[in-house]
View 1 (tube, rainbow, N blue to C red):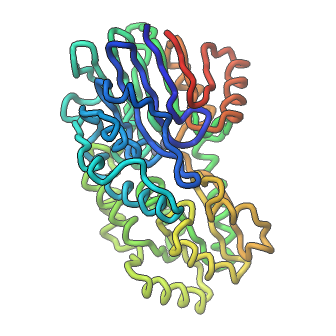
View 2: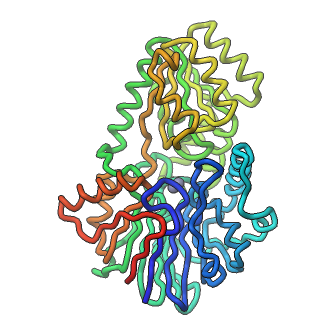
View 3: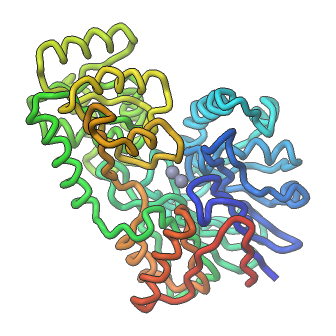
Length: 432
Ligand SMILES: [Zn+2]
Ligand SMILES: [Zn+2]
């Protein structure tokens, strides 16, 4: 009898980790962490880790990748199937996580030697997207680009004849990244189970609506000839927002920290992950020196003071979406002295982080406009609905959002006639 077990990532945002198997064969999908306190890790069952036939990693983000070295401490000796560019991005996520844990006074559950012993196998070098290939006599896999970040993939796994779809973190809304829409009802096949990114739960908005909100907020700050700060992760929505902002505000200076430009160059270096025509668009944006690149603290201070002294509108990009770093908080120290300045949060903020605390303050207390408006890199209600309509599956597990939000989404979709949906929490087991 085959089981699917949630070891993390359903009914919560973080530590994505799913175990699929039986007594003979088993695989793991992702093994991430949750950025709360000293870090929360998946509910790994040590006795089953060493027996895994394969581990798959959908993308480099910490909530999917960081606990993988722990598997090697627990005795896993196989490979981690992922993409080459995902593996290349992992060291910076690991050092970032290590710093965070130390800052919180915590400890990693594994040592440096376990991190060094992780072995990767590159899925895109074994078969092209949308094509099945065999890893062992009982395990076959098919992958495609999931449009969520550079190198991110969805997976279809066939283990002892049972088929499972894992969307990873999925979006068809990126302006830069390509997505291979999974063929989920190939030849009328009903699959045995699906794990589906539903991170935005009942949020109804399409990307277009999100952008209207975002522009409206940015317009307020620009019209008041003030400073707008966009804190974004090093790689991901930041590069898209850079292109969108330069298009929307062609006359406004844009100041960008070097790491964001480096990530843009990294994307340009991997055109097979981009939508058609987007490599040229990136190359053009980089070559026109449209952006003022900030490399040092001194440069940042000088230019910030200059923008303020000249009372000019300017858009600033910094590399920490939740504003946990001293650098990100330094911007706030400068911006908070004028109520027309704005900080626009465009992604997930974990409870207790600096950005989360700022968003809870009313304007007079925060000193400037702090607003949150999402730029979509996951699925909301309309996206999940479309994905469900394209598949036949014995169960459809909705993941990547708090339990209460997932329950609300499930109820809404059931009202619309969808069946076999699941909203679960870590520790849950599905018996097939
Ligand atoms: Zn992600
Ligand atoms: Zn995620």
